Length: 297
Image: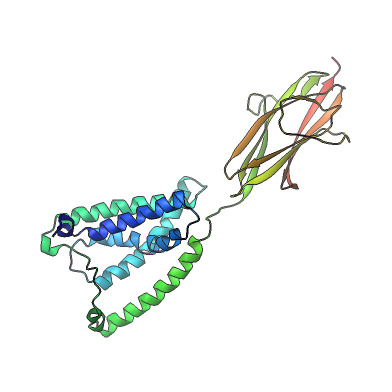
């Protein structure tokens, strides 16, 4: 008999191996179907089993009681794995919840292993991997009813979890759009210029759309000249002569774009500089206006 079998922790080792395999599959193969098959017991059974194993390290409680407690505890624990990270950081991903749940399983599995090791060998709980059909036949009528109800509930929860787990966990979709002054602050915008004097602002976007998104920024003075499209803002743009300037950027979820835009006006007057944001060539409704007074040098 091996030392692992003597300690009675072979079920806990299997629990930890399966849990780590799931997290690794999600990390390196996020679209693999294996994550769904491992994810169902990971959510519906593993957390509760780790808790019941730590609470009941001995073999006094029967298997049916342990199974019912494991399924019953796993659901609120899995919900907490979403709510607790959400209370800390509003933008919760599926991987964040899985890592939190993995840490929970590891912690209680270690407690269960320690508590089993403190008991005499004959009192330690051990899992018998062989299924004996006579065990089911010798169940009492009430135990049989409980077992049947548990099986029906398990099937329903499995189907629900399969659907939820196969879908990406997404929150509210939105985009951030802003302009700052040349120092990256909101204090010293170029509101008063002379003709030919450079003005600089920083224009930024943060994507929270849970997908790669194509944005177009249009910087437009209040004139009727046609827009000029460019790939970068490395030049200084005479908005009196060139009119609107547009730039297209592709961002992934949680990615931020920010760059300087330098301009000048060659004619004096009062201008309203308008920065508009388009997403997939559709105006988002986001625009920022900056009033600039230009005098003759």
